Image 1 (spheres, rainbow, N blue to C red):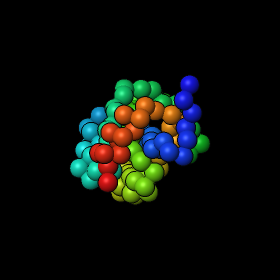
Image 2 (tube, rainbow, N blue to C red; image 1 turned 90 degrees about the horizontal axis):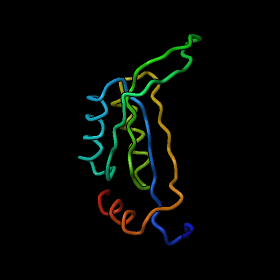
Image 3 (spheres, rainbow, N blue to C red; image 1 turned 45 degrees about the vertical axis):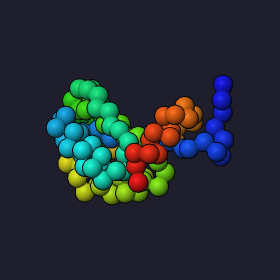
Image 4 (cartoon, rainbow, N blue to C red; image 1 turned 180 degrees about the vertical axis):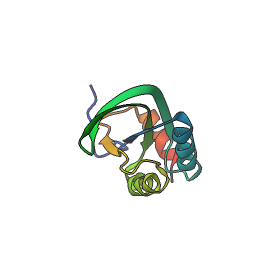
Length: 112
């Protein structure tokens, strides 16, 4: 197994959920157009269970996963706050421990 080194290009995975596929596609398109992400994956429908304002809720949502680089994280978060239809959108940022050199090079080549 190859472990991450300082020479490896770090990939970041940003995820959120949305009420419908159209919103997920719209936001992914904006991020792609601005070259803030290399790609987006939309999964769903999924069922989300959570407590909101003291009430346990079950909703159908779509999961949006975004592949990017560390310098783009803050701009992505700003765009998600501006464009996301939820009052309190989920925005999760994960560092990818390892990926192929070819894939990480592609990601870096696609974003600014």
